Length: 86
Image 1 (cartoon, rainbow, N blue to C red):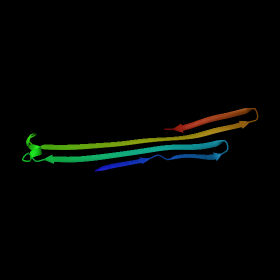
Image 2: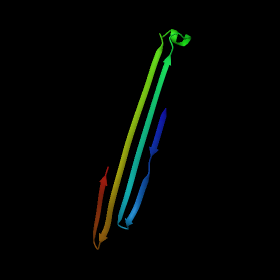
Image 3: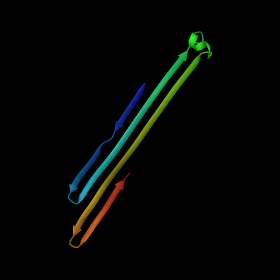
Image 4: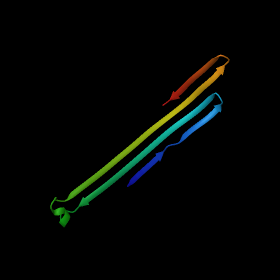
């Protein structure tokens, strides 16, 4: 049994001309399971006295990043700010 899911949306949203929000998210999930048995009385299993195999793999990854950017000018002054969460 094998599962694989991947999710990678990106969103950039201008709230105001001087304020923007962007979001990057990623999620990956893998799952794999395997079972095996070889009868020792068979030709394939006689040389190894029978065989039992089992394999299991699980992977989960998460990534998220949100950024809020402020960029505005007031006469001769300008303000640039960044707030981020990862």
